Length: 382
Image (cartoon, rainbow, N blue to C red; front, side, top):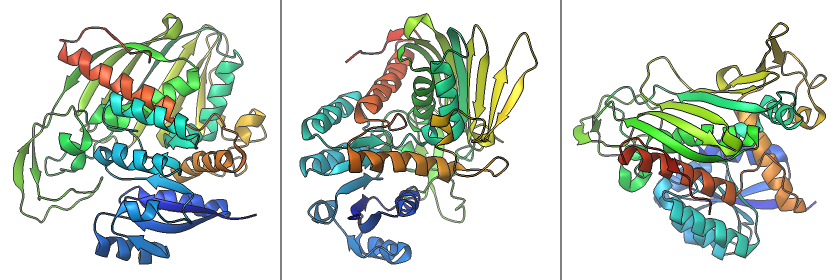
C-alpha cells in the first residue's frame, strides 16, 4: 500500500500529538512541517525526525509529496492557511476552532465542499470508546426520550494572572476565550452523543482575571514560566461562562465553562437524562460510563470491549482493566480521518467543516446573547 504524505503547519503545543497519531497508523509518512520561524521549525523537524522543514506554509503546500495538511496554527491563522490548502487540492485536518468567526467558518465549509476533499476538525473527545458507547445507546433508545443535557468544562491553567498566551489576545484568539477554547468541545460532544443540534442559547459571561502580565511572547498552554519580566495587559475575553442551551425537539440543557477555577485540570463532563435512564461521562475518568436508573441500582460500565456495543468496541484497543487515554481517543479520530482519505467513507467520529462551522455559530451566538444583556438568541440555521 502506498503511504500517504502528511504535512503539518504550526509546530506548537498540539503538533507532536498529531504527528504521534498519524505515525501510529503505519501507512502515513510525516514528510514536512512548516512554521513562521525557519530556524525554530528546523529544530522541531530534527526533534521529531521529520525530513523537511519550511519557514513558509506556502512552500509546504507546494510540496507534491504532501497529500494531507494538518493546520495546528493559532486560531487567527486557521482561515487563511486552511483556505490556501483547500485551493491547493489538499485534504485538510484543522485544529478547532475551524475559524475565528462564523462567516469565515462557513466560507471554509463551502470551499471544502467545492474542493471535494476530506475536511475534518479535531474535536478529539469523539474518539473515546465510551463516548461512542453513549452515542450508540442514545441512538438505540436505551435512555428513552432525552429531555435534558448538561455538563461542564472546567480548567485552572489560567488562574495565575502571569499566564498570558495568544488565546488572550483577541487579534489572535478571537473575541472568546473559554467558550471558543473549551466550551466548543462540550457543544460538539453534546451534539455528537445526542444526535441533536443546539438551536438557541442564553449566556452570562464573566472575565474574572481582567489584567494579565505578559512577557511579550505567547506562552504555550499550561506553561509555568514565571522568572521573566512582564507588563500588564487588559483582557476582555470571558474566562467563566454560564450558558442555558436549547436543543432540537425542545430538549433543555446548560453548560458551565471556565479556565480559572483552581483544582480543575481538564474537567470535561457531560450527562444526558432520558425518561428511561441517564448517562454520564467524565473525561478525567474516561474509562467509565455512569448509567443512572430510577427503578434499579445505578451502574458504572467500564471500558470492556467484550461488553460494549460492537461499533463502540472497535474504538477500544485494550481489554478490560487496561486503561486507555487522551492520546488513544485522539488517535481514534485521526484514524477515522485517514480512513476517509483512503476509502472515501466518512465515519461518525469525524467532525467535518460543516459540523465545526455550526459549533462556531453556536459560540458566536453565545457572545451575542451576553452582549444583548443575557437574552435568548437563536443559532443561525445556515
